[in-house]
Image (cartoon, rainbow, N blue to C red; front, side, top):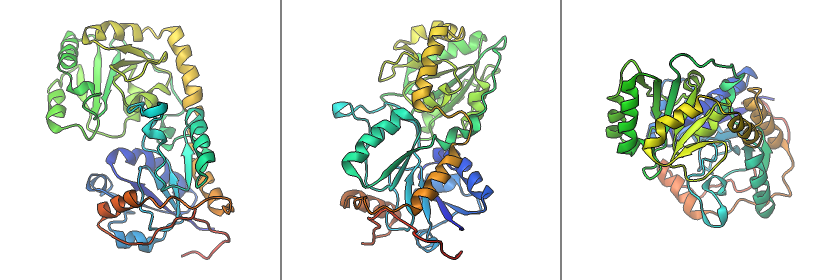
Length: 364
């Protein structure tokens, strides 16, 4: 059977999540198009030839499966709505009763393709209470290009990657003491630094860090982080899901003012400790590496680079499954209005039942 897929994004940082999926879909001979519901994301995919540019085209396309690296998705289009996530759980916003935004059910999705046991188990518990969606653990498509991991020898001048979130209260990029400390370390010339900042960080902050450019410091304006991960010996960050992506390489991470305490991170809260902690991280402490290994087994135990394959397999299988035992998705008036307002398209149409293709149909 021929299937029509839609990769649905909002921001440019979701493009690397969709690319491995697009490759897998095309390798099977299925049709795939991209769509972004905001301008920043549209610009990021503007060089592609398989882009849906407006709502009319989106409706007319009639996808069978919608792979969404977003929190919201157009509920008025056809297709099994699959949540593939735009990041790992970064522990940014602890909520009441120890719940996190990562696990917020917004009522748009038929299937959640989870990244590993520490998210699967939580979603399974929520599923039992709601029962309008399915949960299948597949791993995360974005990290497929990270594997297989190739051991990197630490050079005479180790490479330290700096990455920061856009949330001002959490971001090291806004901190003047951190900036001055890194500037001093750069000038000392003992390390090579590479840096990337979240696309939402203001231009003035980005330009400030770019001004450090030297033989020892390079700024990268990219959302494709995996090539930078591979070049780096350690990561310096704050509270961002880039930590979880990087740590899958079994390399140390130094964090500044992380919101939570974890034994798989080297955590500091004052800029004066940055350099000493870099030195410690670069020794690759054995107890730290043990803690990292334990964490990876819960976070994302798949190191075969085939998560995209599992996502496509799970989506197709669930598309055809009998879903009579599933409830309708919630009415969700406010969120549905929000996505209509974003797309400037107002309709009462909404696919509230899990989308299903019972029998094979002719190719469109």
